[in-house]
Structures are given as structure tokens and as C-alpha cells.
Image (cartoon, rainbow, N blue to C red; front, side, top):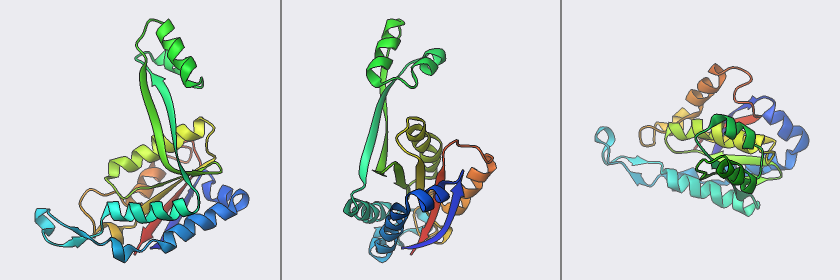
Length: 203
């Protein structure tokens, strides 16, 4: 795959270039070594394109995953407890999971388990490769990366997306770089409040 475009939000790319240049090189290497041609394996069942050969999100995710695993990037999961009371959530937001549960239950409310998971984390940088539906991109940018940043697990979140030139050879509903860049810029310079790097890739 080719790294076609990149966008730095709140200095995300600058943080990588200055403080984590080896990780930025690894991210570029993973993208470069992912064989897009081998991922064009999905036979479309959609009416508009029935029988056409599309790029498979699963195959592309696997190619990206293999690359990051070779560089020793690991999945990371954070567990926490939620409830119905917004004030109590604010109070427990920065507590560890056991403290959160105790506070919620001591208040007489039901504590519900939840978690955030990100695919690849290394040295306080998180990467998500998103070749799925566009709604998942917003979740990555405004929930996952932000939660890991607020939780002091990462300094930068990186989102890898298909460019439109790739997305148009995929199933319908897949998010793409140009559209998600628009959505990000529209929110304003400080939203979400986490340094990010948006990357657009193509065959």
C-alpha cells in the first residue's frame, strides 16, 4: 500500500517526528509492506456491483496486523465501570476499575462493566487501521483514542483509512480519508482533545 496523505491534529505528527521517529518509520514500513493486490478477494453481493471483485477489509486488516505484530505493537484494553448518574461518572472517571465499582455500588447504583480496546499500542502511541463502516471511524477518533489519551496511556492516536480511490473499490458504507478529514476539521481545532495523525492509504 501507499501512504498517500496525512493530517496532523493538535500536533500529533510533530510529536511522532520529534519524540518517536522510530515509531513513525515503523508505521510507514507496515503500510508500505502491506500487499494491497493480495487483498482484492471479496466478491460483491450488492445489487449495484454484484460479482465485482472488491478489496476485502478483513484481508487488509490482516495485512496491517501482521506488519504491526512483527514490530511488536500489542493490543491494549482498558476496563472500567459505568452507571446512570453523570455526576458519579465524573467523580469516578480517573479512579481505577475497582475503585469505580465500589463508589458506584456504595451510592446504591448498579455498576456496569465496560471497556475500550485498541488494536496496536507501543511506547504511548496507538494505531487503529479502519477499513470498516464509517461509524467506526468516528468511534475511534472521538472515543477510543480520546479515552486512552485521557487515561494517560497514549500521547498520540493514529488512524489509518482508505483514500477515496481505494474505498470506491470496496463495499458500500466504508469510511474514507477525505470524508473523515472533513468531519475532523469541521469540529474545530481543539476537538477531539487528543493529538492525532490521520493517514490515507491506497494500492
